Amino acid sequence: MTSLNLGILAHVDAGKTSLTERLLHAAGVIDEIGSVDAGSTRTDSLALERRRGITIKAAVVSFRLGDTSVNLIDTPGHPDFIAEVERVLGVLDGVVLVVSAVEGVQAQTRVLARTLHRLGLPYLIFVNKVDRRGARDDDLLREIAQRLTPAGVPVTAVKALGTREASVTAIDPPLDVLAEHDDALLEAFVNGGAAPDLWPALCEQTRAGAVHPVFFGSAITGAGVDELIDGIVTLLPAAGGDPGGARSGTVFKVERGPSGEKLAYVRMFGGVLRVRERVGEDRVTGLDVFGVNGAAEVGAGQIAVARGLSRARIGDPVGVVPLPGGEKERSFSPPTLSAVVEPVDDRDRTALHQALAQLAEQDPLIGLRADDTVSLYGEVQKEVIEATLAEEYGIAVTFRDTSTICIERPAGSGAAYRMIAVDPNPYLATVGLRVEPLPPGAGVTFGLEVELGSMPYSFFRAVEETIPKALERGPHGWAVTDVAIFMTHAGYWARQSHSHATFDKSMSSTAGDFRNLTPLVLAAALRDAGTRVCEPVDAVRLEVPADTLTAVLPVVGQVRGVPLATSFEGPICVVSAHVPAARVVDLRRLVPGVTRGEGVVEASFDHWAPSTSG
Image (cartoon, rainbow, N blue to C red; front, side, top):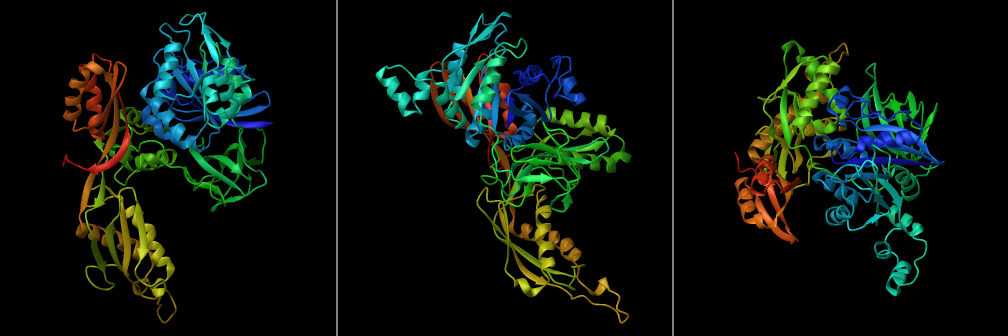
């Protein structure tokens, strides 16, 4: 029995959840296909998901297709929940990317495809909704080649396209695309000889991520789904990993159970994790392995829900060796909006902070701060947080106006220190820190310019561990990054006691003294250095009718954008630009008016730049 961890990705409303229902029905997991509109789908378990008709949380469902055990992960399609997609990609073996035959390749589809290419994840393309009026096939294949990948390989064709009678038949994959990656096929193609069986080459190239088979079908009628299932089983690579090797895995999702216990979703890449074994400081008290009843262990290639990992956070390793390939780079844009959450009843303030802390466990990019500020991708996510707090925690809330998240970078060098027993230092600790700017993207580093043996190691650790929290709020109120911090002064009072041998904290330094003093010294050093506020800037791609270019460029300038390049693809002009993230919403609003409604705006985070808006 082989296993496959499969993701289904798509732009919102392309039919991803409907396809999941159809696959579950075909596998015999459900007797009746649920409806997104009716809120009866298996994977959209949240009441809010059913009400809105969108997927918010990734859901895992296990079933068998022949001799393959499939863990299918249905992920959100709305851009506001892209963080949920991001954390899932690292645990997948293959993907089905859903494209609507009517709407075609949409902005989010392209973002997802670029990320799949970057990570080298094999994927199939399922062109859904072939039964809908306006559905396209050959024209859409050209669009896929232009906007997604030139390596799309159609393996099915549609009859009665755009009608409820639409049906799908298998076809031989085109030789020319496969020949680009196979010398034997290339020779046959050039010489015009008979082509050998192309399916083995298609399997090999698909698993290597060189080509992407395209299947047509309809999740609603079931047309083409059997062919897609055959493709999933035969074309995508099975889960790998050595069950006898060192334990290696990752936590990719965290939930709370009915009684409030933490549930950690774990994907194992190697070795075995068993009940009663330790992970860090916690001990596994229970395992629910997807596709296996009553399992007491989870092995390489499998996914399980682990209980007892009370300290687990998304992204935590499970094991004693690094994950294969090391830590994956961030694939999607970070959130660029923030808002303060306020309880309607002030008596709920403590309960609100605790509830937000639990939501931040499930989505670390919420980035909860002490003043109950949360990070956001968009307004829909704000509505979801508000509804979740009301329905699951019984807390009514409002949001202050949404603002753009900025960061601060040191403008120069700065230093500060506080000496023990010298005012205005109320703590029994000496701490001196110097800050230096680092190149963009370098993050935060910490180093010592004092002897490591000059005081107990736990005091140095207290300083180092306090710094990340202290950097969350710089002189201008934003998180500080791209900074090198050096400890320049260190001192303490050794443990002392009275004559009757009881410990006297008033005479002895503790780690708490260093934790309390470090933020004060670091804040003073940053003030001495000065910081620059930087705003997020998106890389924007506009596809507009070529004859509207002269009207589009002034609109880009109107939103403080900087055009970088233009190119022409037939009647379409592609404009690349950098635009402040805070103004992208204005760009999306203005472009249709100068492009007869035909302009398409695609944006993703690119870099941070000094703010010009104050």
